[in-house]
Every structure is written in structure tokens, then in C-alpha cells.
Amino acid sequence: MLAAGWVAGAQGDEPSPTPAPAGPVTVGDETSVTVAAGASSTVHVPVRVADGHRVQANPASNQFLVPLELDIDDQEGLVFAIPAYPKAEPYLLDGADEVLMTYAGEFEVIVSVAAADDAAPGDHIVSGELHYQACNSRMCLFPASLGFELRIVVSESGERSEN
Image 1 (cartoon, one colour):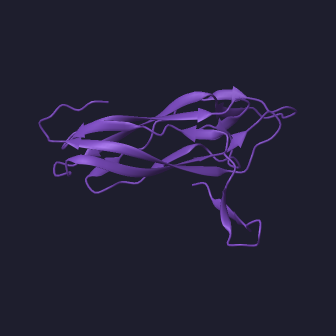
Image 2 (image 1 turned 180 degrees about the vertical axis):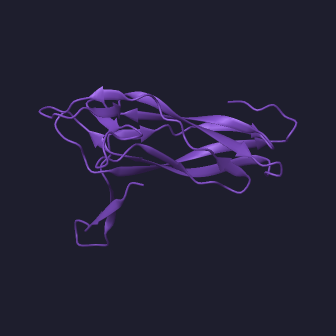
């Protein structure tokens, strides 16, 4: 998640929060899916990389780079599968010899969620984190993480699931 820094107030008063600068990556904030108890469904997590940037693919091109990785916390009655990442695109930094496999623009990471037979019906807010290493045309930035939430609606076992 993004950290918040603290700076002193203008009069030396109590510190006031200063948000950390926004990174080049965002995750869709209204991702939701409905899944019936005892069934599974597919979650499409939208990711956007700012113009002029790219993120390392999963798997990354070499062991020294940090691949894009989606982590979602299982919740009682809900289990998430290993995410499926999009097809990577080759990219060469200015002056570099090694081609990097990356993602750019808008894409989705897809993950299956299974609801147990006895999963509690209703809305479930599930926390996740997207880990990434972004690059621009000249250099790769330090690895970063971005927190997000998913809304999973569990319906009764006989009801139809929607994506």
C-alpha cells in the first residue's frame, strides 16, 4: 500500500499527513463478481500503467527484476486460485542490450474465486495487493506495491453466478 509521510505544520503545530506521490500504476476500484455458494467464478482485475511506463511481466525477464504479482487474501468461505497474467510484450530501454518482457497500457489479471458450500451469502470485501516494478524509457524504478479491494457477492447455492 502507499505510505503516508508526515510533515510539520506551518506554525510548528501537530504533524499533518502528506500523501505519498501517486505511482504509474492503478488498479480498478470497482471490481466485483457474484459467485454461488459451492461454485466458482472469474474475477477480472483491471490494471492501468501510465503512458510512458511499463511494468515487468510475470514471469520477469531476469532474476533481478520484480514481476507483476497479484496477491489476494483468502477469506472464510472464499479461496482464490493462482492468477493468470496477460501475454507480455518485449521492450528495450534506451541504451540497454537486454530486452525486457513487460506490460503497458490497460490490461487485466484474471483469477478464479471458489465459494465453499457453506460460504456466508452476501457481500464480502476482500483485500489484495499488486506488486510491480515499473520502468520508463531510461530506467527501472524501485519495486512498489498497491493495495486494492474486491467485492465478492456470494449468492445462495441454487442461484446463477455472474461475471
